[in-house]
Length: 151
Image: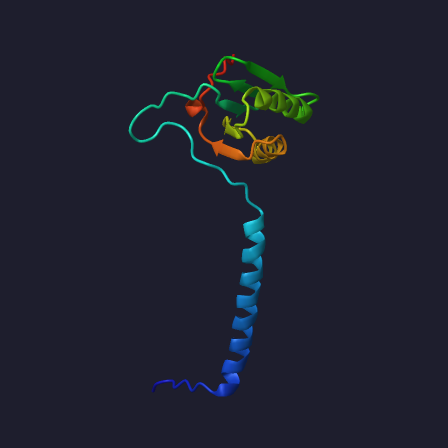
C-alpha cells in the first residue's frame, strides 16, 4: 500500500513566507559584504618568466616580529615591534617618506611571512591606504621587488 501526499494551498503559504524572508535576508547581507573589501592587484612575474622589478617599486614585508619597508633602489628599513605590538606610527612615517620620494606613484607591494596574523596584514593595508597608497598588490614574499636582508 502506497502513501499518497496531497499538497494543499494551506501548506504552501508558510513555505512562500519563509522563502521571501530568506531572499530578503540574503539581499541585505550581500550589500554589506560588498562594503568590507580592500581591492588588491596581482603583482610579480607573469607566466612568461621573470620581469625586471620597477626602479621605484615600494615593498612592505610583514614578519612575525617586524615590518620591512623598502624601495628597489636600495632604501630599506626595518620597523620592529614595540612592546609586543607592531609599530603602526613607524610604518606610517616610513611609508609617507618613501611615497614622497617616488613622485606621483601610488602603488605598493605587500607580502607576509607564514605565521603572521591576518589582522596584521589587513592593518598594514589600511595603513598604506591612509598614507596615500591605494593601489595595493598582495603577493608571496619571494616575489617582492625588494629583497630584504633578514637574519
